[in-house]
Length: 205
Image (cartoon, rainbow, N blue to C red; front, side, top):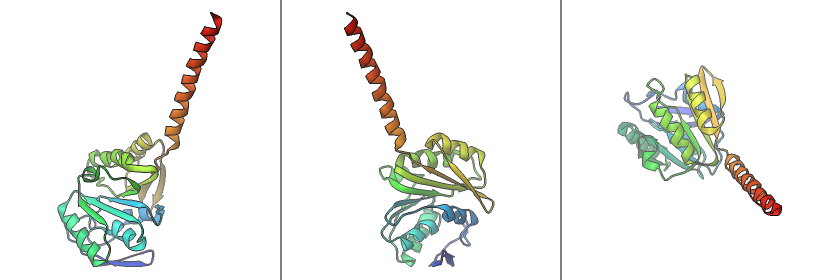
């Protein structure tokens, strides 16, 4: 099958065992509509299925470093075949979430998680994704549900933007480096107050 997005047409093989086997699903399209991705970003397609998101960015941003993971070996095999079919060479691995790429770090993570199940999978995607984002890295997730995802992402990242698009919720969060600097400043300020009290005591004796 052929999929065209933003003027780029790519060819894919799929089967009934993967998510959205007949083409680009509306949720993934909504997420891509709002994702900001730069030419040299390190990109993770988290839960890649037959591989559209990662292959699209590998084809349109040749200087980017694209990684694609899925827990399903069938999806991984399809993604590998589709990468070859479209003449791109992203890193593709079978992985339960980010476990197989635990040492890697990314500028952008994009995910359309299995939200018809319980929240254990997106919970790990969000928590591990935050840990493996570079400073100021961007996290995008799309679902048809809002409350749990909005609260979880806000708790982990310290903030979240929610965009409604075609019946889906696109969540965007950024790993802020300013938080760490703020904590460091707070600690430094506390130490200086302790030092001041010590100096005050010494001055009184």
